[in-house]
Image (tube, rainbow, N blue to C red; front, side, top):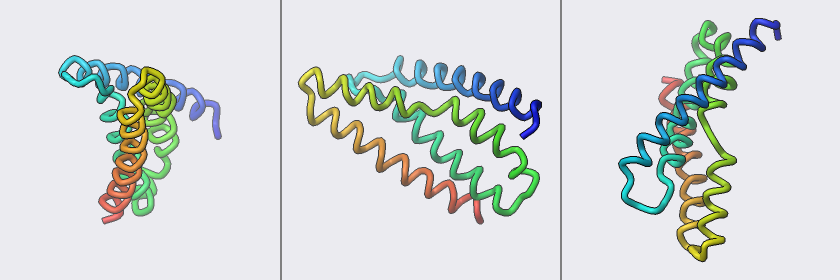
Length: 124
């Protein structure tokens, strides 16, 4: 990988992290529930978009060349598995075992489904 690609991935990762903050903050401000839905929205949308990128990359070589910038960089910075894990653990530690398990399990199932849907749609 070229030095320019390394820099591009780093810059796109930073932009993705900023986008994550904006989306998470927007969802959280509108969420009346005590379940952290901002992270759920971020991770599911990231999986859908990475799936789309993967599906499209199999048919469009130009997109495949951008995959490190868009997938690893932008969407890698946008998604946040570690935050989702901490949120699930916090729910469980606060005595909300069911909420923590639903949060973690739901995120896993929905993220996998979104990724698969993205691959299918992107491969059409």
